[in-house]
Image 1 (cartoon, helix red, strand yellow):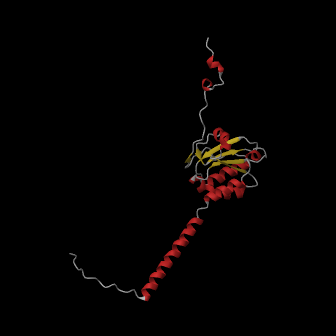
Image 2 (cartoon, helix red, strand yellow):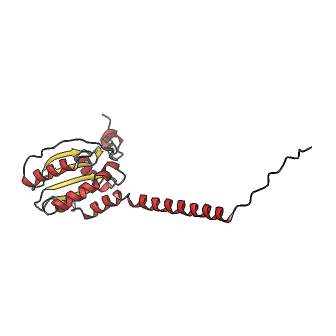
Image 3 (tube, one colour):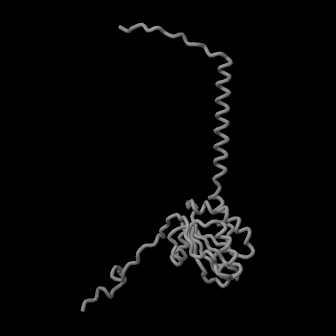
Length: 196
């Protein structure tokens, strides 16, 4: 009991139509490949952060070589840090002979004492040090290149930083610090067991 429906005759594709279709597929594939390639090449900020860190002055050297220092707490996942990487690289090239640039990755537990000491709770976090290694000022968050350049120029000249304690956009960061145990929770603390 099936009804016989009229079959529409399939139109054979002409050779010219096949060529046009194949050509358009090739053009679209090339366009997608080029856009994907260019898109991947423009995402170099993380590599720039890595390069800045690799080229930075070791902390111990920076605190003892008699040059002023800019210490940056950063992380590769920090979008604000990535956004500032180009400007920081340019400033580092401009002031390389006069200022130590130190990069401390907050994801490295090695820097936990410094993270705690400078109360890093958002990144990027910048700490400026004088020639003798004493802390002068801190800025937190995204800073325009002009503000960082003005602070670096003042740091080199030994003047007061014009934009000290400024706060810009940050990436939230919480130091992996655990609470200390009280003496009564320590099994080696025998004083808690003595009863008078």
